[in-house]
Image (cartoon, rainbow, N blue to C red):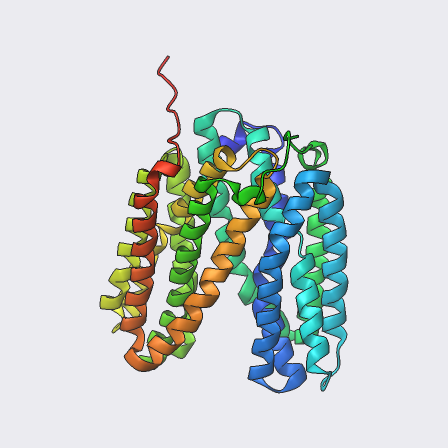
Length: 396
């Protein structure tokens, strides 16, 4: 985290951005349990959560592209107010409310959710000029984001159990609006102006081969993440320890946090397409090893912690590459596309993992995750030439 100390205002900006992103980590599970309470049906709740996920994936690049043209402030504030209002409406729905209304409101929340993460990553190069410190900052940011996924879902579930699922969503809406407005009020965000390209390239941020490579890599990484979530749940259930699934996933996230901090201290992740392939190979190997640990909760916890250490460095490596491979004037949209790619992959991974877990058990599902990671590594290796290596500063 030392790289953040060197930039005035960077620590505060990062801290506010993390607070603003906590609600996003709660919304999928929060909408699911609230929809289950309102409709009385898990199937209906799944449709609501799915509508939110699809809309979130579609809305991120759209809002990112607008921010690249108009600046961050209006996009962030308008998105926060719209998403907060839609969340408040969902929270206020009584039992027996029409499913169509729930689905429509959940989709509205997803479409309007402000792209705080993409905006934060777009600002990092403006805050930290030194290339080595910049790479470390991306690693630190990737590690810090894990805190939202470790703390967010348990918080919304606790609030739902203590008060009500509607109150939990209303609280998430309040934090989303307040956190995003606070982020938009930061001097770095207010002062940021889009880079003026001579002409917006065809395909926007996906107009370069390098960006398409990174997006495809993140789709496959998302498949791994989605499959592991299902596999961990299946393994815990098979061992008669269903309640251990949540803590096990928390250990996985804690491993990622630790890996990100180590990567930040070491100066960031991979510097080239070939280096990224090696990082992805480590990601694949760590998660493939879970297949051999599925017979014991303790073994699973240990290997999850180890496998998790490869996640944040993977994110950091890709994020550090975006600033130089995205077409001019499309950085925010590019970062948003990466979020969308992971979401698409995770949805596909969860869906396919469910069928594999039913037929072959948790071990087979972990193998599926490992294969997806290996495919990502192979893709990065084959298309390594599309990603120019980072220049290493000469010694003084």
